Structures are given as structure tokens and as C-alpha cells.
Image (cartoon, rainbow, N blue to C red; front, side):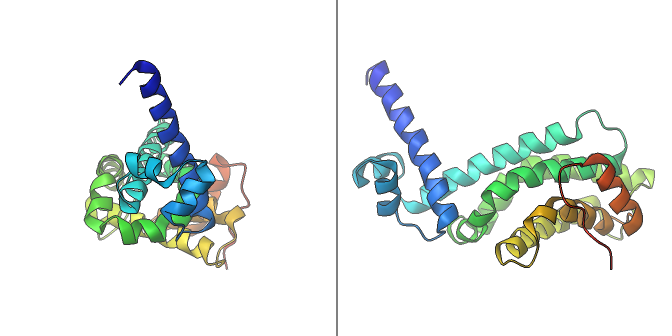
Length: 210
């Protein structure tokens, strides 16, 4: 294949992925035919890059996890305090997760749960190290070991994404709500968690305490 053909193939693949994400965000059950039409290519071209709808969604999941990993690292970079690092990490991760949140349901159906867990391993390892340090230093208090607590955090974020999808949570407040919820699940008192998140995040509507 010539360099020009390779470039065109790469461009087609990128366009298919971008269009697929947009279509799946509008309709999580969007078919490969619909994605092909929206991308302006024939169905055969889509299948040439992705042999199945499962493979396409799996690739989008890989891209989402890579973006999450970058956001997690960037969000807490240079922050020594474990609670603040966790808050900044959740806020940064939520900005990425919010873009993909409507894919949660189809990804869980399409990409086996062990596959999702495996994809999240690098992010989880970083989170476990942070939680372990916070538990050792007394910034966090939990009956759970760091690995189990990290798993709880993941489930909290997924549940909150689904809550936004189901109109149970205002998306404008979701980032701060997620950060406060994760902090309180780690043993940080609610009033301190709210104050900390308000201090480090200035672009979202703060959650209210009952």
C-alpha cells in the first residue's frame, strides 16, 4: 500500500471513529449502516476497518480509557495533598467521562466487563497508589483496602454517569457532585469535601448538602 493510500485509510478510520462516537451518543443502538451513511462511506469501508460493531465500540472504549488516563495524570500532577489530588483527578476525569457517558450502556453490553476492567488497569493502579498514601497519612478513612476502595470509586462514577443519562442528576453539577461523592466515600467529612471541591473547581454548579 502506498503512503498516500495509507494516509487516506488512516483518515477514513479516524472519520469513522469520530462519526461513530457522535452517532452512538445520539443513539446508543446506532447500527453500522447508519454510521457508514453518516460518515459518507459505504458499509464495506466501515467493516474494512472494524470487522464488527463490537470491535468499533471496543476501539472507542480504548480511546476513552486513554483519554481518562491522561486526564487523571494531568489533573493531580504536582499536588501533594491526597484529598486535593483525588478531587482534581475526579474533576479532570469527569470532563472526559462526560463526553463518553452515553456509551456506558452499549460498552458494558458490547465489551465484556473483564475487558473494561482490564482497560482501566493503568488508571486504577495510579488511583490505588494515591488512596494507599492517603490512607497511610490519615487523609482518607475507610474500612476498605485501597484496591477495593478504588473499585468502589469506579462504580460510583459509572452510576453517576447513568444518573445523568436518566435525568436524575443535573449535568451542570455532576462534576462537583462526583468529586464530593468520591471524597466522602473515602472518609472525608462532607462539609470539608464540598469546600475542597469548590476551591479547586470554578466552572461548575456546586452540589448542595441536604
